[in-house]
Image (cartoon, rainbow, N blue to C red; front, side, top):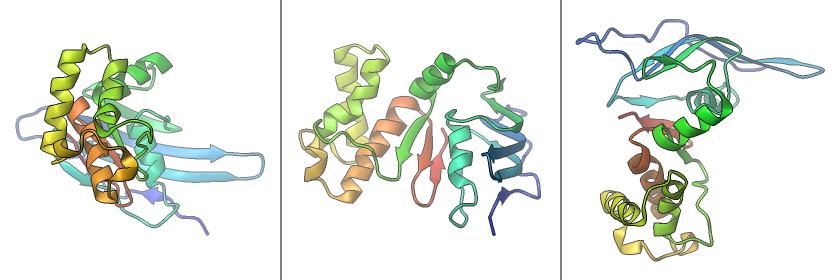
Length: 195
């Protein structure tokens, strides 16, 4: 028996001011095909997420939560349906455009945090900013502010192995949230704040 993440009723809400949703999914389906089996991971997802909203995606193991987050994070594409990000359809974006948007617009907080063990807390938060071409002075200011916001500035010179799990999580949040302005969570409870 397999589970599929299905939304039977639309979760699209009109904005009081008529604004465009940050994220809009219309009829999104995802089917994985192999030689032997066809797996329906998502079926008929309709979803609006507006700036500043908190969203939680919950369900049993194998129901499609990670697949949905992969589509939202531009790591995968739907088999059917449409996805608009900031009012722009993402279906025809090139691989390079998707990578650029992930670097500048979407931050990931992985369940295992994916901190680099040989880098300090400061360097882990700073690394994606170097790929963005941000200057050293601006990176320092940005990272210092991000670490202060999550209460980890006092651990900036520590390695991930010298931190508790909760502290590692806060570093991952600083890396994702404060460098992009938006975050797509990939934690056990799959919670995110879109801003």
